[in-house]
Image (cartoon, rainbow, N blue to C red):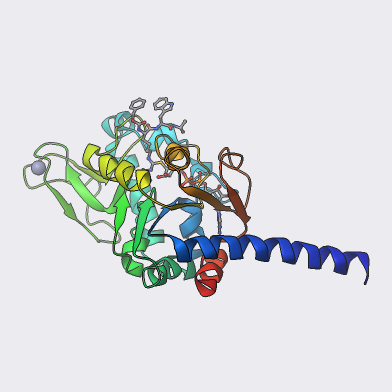
Length: 256
Ligand code: BV8
Ligand code: ZN
């Protein structure tokens, strides 16, 4: 056997043993938590935040996804969200989203904790979803706090206004804003009682979501990372599956 063939066989064995180990843990788990970031939606065509094609590339997060940016220039912030809504509006859930739904038939409890605001887990049909950073399709009034879903693409007016006359804002969590306490409490509860925690497609840079794998590990869960690259969590997790989440998750569910 030639050297490169031997290398291929060895790496294939390593990958398969990782997949089989995680598939076994999924089949034995009572509660699986899957925590997803922008890499989960990248295969659907939704730009990530920090990758090569990252959407922040053309803008600084501090300029747009903060309360002060909205206060100073609501039109520019709404133009950015309108641009993102137009992109996301054309995207469909990918095989990774669908694999998570399929996993629900093989595991007693599958909980999805997502940093993504695109709503793709919901469109795929997942039953238990915690959108810790909100949802780009929901808007909230800065005055009367009324919130509703708005799927207009493009938006009819920029910036959007509420019937009460005040500005409507995207119902997402901006940098420097606290996450919804009730959602966060529920997330900490399920992380505290899960058997398997899968951190998929996130750079693990944004607090407090970046610490979810650490909390899961301390609570005794087996922690897996699925990512194209290393992240600050790579040396915290029990097992790393390196690759495309939209390929790895279906392969895992197939093996369960
Ligand atoms: C909070 C919603 C308490 C909006 C987002 C200084 C001043 C102010 C705040 C802070 C500060 N220092 C620290 C903070 C706290 C701050 C923070 O952590 N900042 C970081 C940047 C240092 N956090 C907060 O402010 C949070 N609130 O802590 O409240 C507080 C209050 C006041 C002051 C201090 C603390 C609120 C954070 C929420 C921000 N909102 N989104 C919107 O979307 O418009 S964050 C945004 O980035 C996304 O929602 C996402 O969650 C987040 C992280 O991005 P990722 O999802 O990980 O995506 P990324 O592009 O980075 O990575 C993609 C990954 O996928 C890569 O690893 C890539 O390799 C991989 N990948 C790509 N394709 C694939 C793949 N993997 C597998 N398969 C593929 N196909
Ligand atoms: Zn209002």
